[in-house]
Amino acid sequence: MSNDDHNAKFYLANEHVNNGRHEDALEVFRELLKSDMDDGGKSMACLNMATIHDMLGQVPQALAAFDRGIGLERKFGTFTVCQRKATYCMEKERWEDALAELNVLERSTISDLDKAHACLNAATACEKLGQGSKALHWYERGIRYEKPHHRFEVAENLAWYHSSKNRNRESIELYEAILREPSLTEADKSRIKNNLKIMRG
Image (cartoon, rainbow, N blue to C red):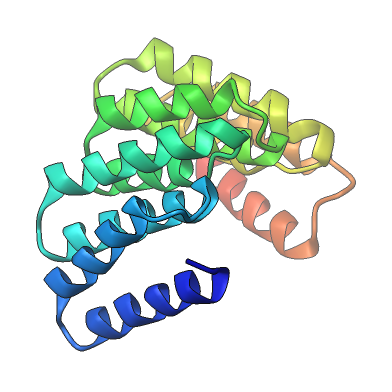
């Protein structure tokens, strides 16, 4: 089967989905997984299957499709399906499953900013599990990844986290440190100054 044939199958599956024929779409993707399509294409087929299973409310099948796609993509060192599964597990509040994938992502070859985002999600998952010390660990790791790139999303979230735990001094100190960064936009400065005003009463 040629690349054009594979692309045609993807198009057909998408047409099935758009017209509510989800089982037909799944069958097309199953055929592609049995074909001579390369592993990159097959991993994307798995990703599409996970999305369709979720549309049908079939969470276990969606997770199985993600896992099959992850197994395929690891052969060539990419992490697209892994990232999508982590996001999916966060959305479904499957915190332990999310942490398993986020740990993989933090040790992978994805960019520092993607790792920072993974750390932020891991901190959120730990907080939801009542693991405060582990949440702080993930926040600090995320800050180390983002700071060299003059980004402060994780740092801001940590400041908010401190305030939510009534650790106002830690929150204020972190907001003040962020405010001193020369790379902040005016909108960033305005938002952080407002947060400081609230924190100081």
